[in-house]
Structure formats: structure tokens, C-alpha cells
Length: 284
Ligand code: FAD
Image 1 (cartoon, rainbow, N blue to C red):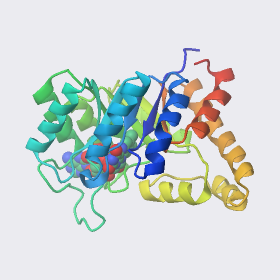
Image 2: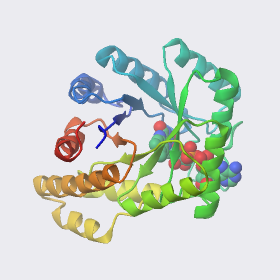
Image 3: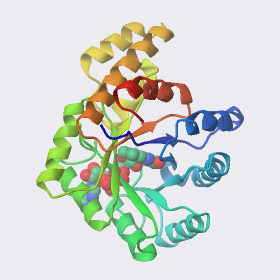
């Protein structure tokens, strides 16, 4: 089996404790030799300075490539152009290009501002910077919650690929069949870019049910019931969650997933535990 390629997602820490803890988390994660780190960008641009600062911290502290997430909701071409220039000057070669989440009150699936959808952001990056940046986009094996249907959502994914995306990272999911179905649809549509599963470790009943509800991911009933039962037994819940997600990762990698992207939530151990579990089956 080919060696496993993986990347780690971080968010800009929001508290002094989070800032203080980041170097240790980076040391632990970097020791696993990820292909790159990515750093999220808050909805509505709220974390843009934080993304930049965290990106610099990652690169300086680990020497590993770091990719900023860039959302276009509510933004202007001028603002995005300035951000792209700033990232380019900082040595960035990879960007995760997204629309971003709309305000809860939004009536239309189109974002306010000069970019309505992520495919327009991808086109803009290509127009202004050619092939300088490797562009990653989001993919939704279980459908984006605001899409009018799975077919329309897939057509929208294809638009991002046609606009120049090099690779995609999926929304978190716990049904591997949804990923394989998505890949089958890519095959039929002639889409050959790598689509890397986004993997969220399970460490809390409250947070995983909230995440899944927020992004439209299906948490299988039996998993939800087991987590609910174990919610006040931290060690047992961690063991159970690690087992579920390890089996998910194994199934994905053994059946052709080109790599794994871990939503670390700035915690090293849950992700490293999964990688240790996977090491026997899938040499890194
Ligand atoms: P798009 O691809 O633009 O799709 C958005 C919706 O519009 C979909 O329902 C799609 O079907 C529909 N659509 C697209 N094009 C058209 C069209 N031409 N006509 C009609 N409908 C259309 N959010 C953040 O705020 N910050 C982050 O850092 C961040 N990182 C993420 C990383 C990953 C890997 C993923 C999977 C998601 C991330 N998100 C992040 C969440 C993301 O911003 C939301 O899911 C957002 O609602 C959609 O972004 P998108 O880029 O997928 O949008």
C-alpha cells in the first residue's frame, strides 16, 4: 500500500491560553510529518489577522508548509487581491478557497459581496496569480446543507474544478459510502483531482453532534446512541470515538482515498492517536 499522506487543520487561537498552547501542539503535530498545515479563516472575515499570524507561527515554528483558508463571503475583489498579495509575499503556495458561511439570516444561497460562490473566488485567484497557488476547495459527499439537491451541489463542485481547483477536501463525514459514491460521480464526470476526506476525531458527544448538525453530516444512529451513553465517561468515549474514526480512516485509505485531512481543533492527541492506530495498517 502506498504511504499515507495527511494534513492538519488548525484555527487561529482565540484566547491567551490557546495562543500559549499552540507551540506545543505544533511540535507534537509536526513530529508526525504532515504534508502541510491549513489555518481556518473566520466567517465574515473575523479572523483574517489571526489566520495570517497563525500561518506565520506555523511556518516559523515547524518549517512545514502552511495554507491559509480564504473565504470570499461579504468581501470585495480589492480586499481579496490585497490578501493574496500579502500571502504571496509571505511565501504561501497553497490556499483553501471557500465561500464561507452565510449569516444565519441570509435568504439566498448566494453570498453578499462581490463574490457569490467559491468558484468565482477560484477563477479570481487563477486570473490574478496564474498557477502560483495550489488551490484546494471544499467537497460535500453528503451534500452542502444549502444546496437545492445532490445533483445541483455536484454541478457546483464541478464548477470549482473547472475554475481551476487542484484538489478538494471534504466536509467531515462518518459514512464512508457517501465518499465512495461522491468519487464514483467524479469518475463519471471526468473529474480527476484528488478529493481528500476531511476527518474529525470524536472526543465529545456535545461537540460532535453540534458539528454534524451544523454542516449537515450524518452521524450514524448507533454511533450517536453510544456517544450519548458514554458522554460523561471521558476515557471510554475517547476510546470508542477513536475506534470508530480509525475504522473510517482505514476503510477510506484501503479503498483509494488519496490522503486524509484532519480537523484537529488545535488538539494534537486525538489526531495522533488515530495516526498511531493507522500506522500498522497504513504505513505513513
Ligand atoms: P460554494 O462551493 O460556493 O457552495 C456554497 C453553496 O452554494 C452550496 O450549497 C452550493 O451547492 C451552492 N452553489 C455554488 N455555486 C452555485 C451557483 N453557481 N448557483 C447556485 N448555487 C451554487 N468556513 C469558514 O468560514 N472558514 C473556514 O476556514 C472554512 N474552512 C473549511 C474547510 C473545509 C475543508 C470545508 C469543507 C469547509 C470549510 N468552511 C469554512 C465551511 C464553508 O465555508 C461552508 O461550508 C460554506 O457554507 C460553503 O463554502 P464553499 O466554499 O463550499 O461554497
